[in-house]
View 1 (cartoon, helix red, strand yellow):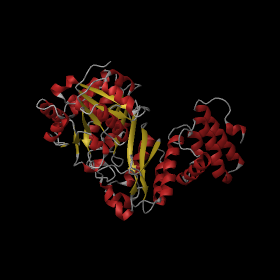
View 2 (cartoon, one colour; view 1 turned 45 degrees about the horizontal axis):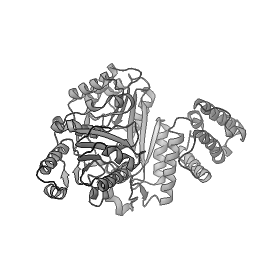
View 3 (cartoon, rainbow, N blue to C red; view 1 turned 120 degrees about the vertical axis):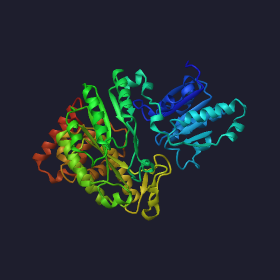
View 4 (cartoon, rainbow, N blue to C red; view 1 turned 180 degrees about the vertical axis):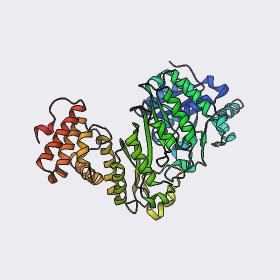
Length: 499
């Protein structure tokens, strides 16, 4: 039975491996209220009733929920149950999903208070105000009339914010990803992203930040994911951070950074090449290679530089390259997207993450709604359904393409086979295969790895092998068998029994 806590800080993560840096920032800055506060994290795999049962064991008076696009519906169910069972419990919500366009959201109507924007210093201020008013009255109705329901966050000097890293516990350090940030915000204005609302990127004190990283490292921290939107914005800071970790490099260290794809100065290249395979991952938000689309969404990107930098990273570094593209942007059609996709694939990044455009609340991409007939799903994650250039049926096909690409190409289980099958017209060939796979199986999920090998064999044979010789057909079968064994699968695959 956990000890009673006056205040609970809660969120629902997508999976166990994730940790909430946001809750830890709130906890770090709670001052005199910290000793009466507990952080509790759940995952989306738990039923709402089970989460509520666990929460109520703490008998909290105030609960703060971090609300994101992936947990908004689940969190709403939890808060709804809490308000039925313990209506006297004060519920405070915050996070990107409820900071904008919140008025019509049911979760906002259920909650007692909402903090807009970064709540690092404002959560404790609101809790103090609640406690002060509670001491004067026993009525929540009176309490809510004394405090404004929407509590706008005040812009805080980052130097005033206490860093959260000491509040990762031993289990987090041993088993989970440690989210860290050396800077906050973004100077770019890409309209599909909430960072378009930022004025600029601001750095934390680099020496203090690295002291905190040293403490985490000494405690055994090795899996660091930087949440900075633009890690390579300031070259000197990027180099200082990379040098810090290079001096502490061991076989377990893994660093993930999101970098600006067209900015890779020689000084940064010099240190990147010193990292061995398995220690660095770069996420490059390419999003689109179409200059007209880029201009429409206020995205500044030098495509030539981007292509050169990805080529350099692949040829000279051992970093894992994860590149992002977005389908469904206003003004983009299937032909221009296919051209950009093939350009990117030809550079052979390790992963291409194909995302379907989502309308995050508050993002300015909505200004294109009328001209480009942007139609979004009203339920999270608010995916685009159609545009003037992409009809609903094609959008559905591309959603399946993205799913199958993740299962087959990004999984890394078909490297030898796909090097033969996808060596030209990659987008077009995989789209034909994707269409066949859905027509044949009717599935996008719950497909076993063993079954995938059969699908790859029969699907590509049906769609592509007719243009190949028997010799090439044999070569592809041999490659698929090698991949099958490399994946650790035993026995004879079905496609060998019934070629």
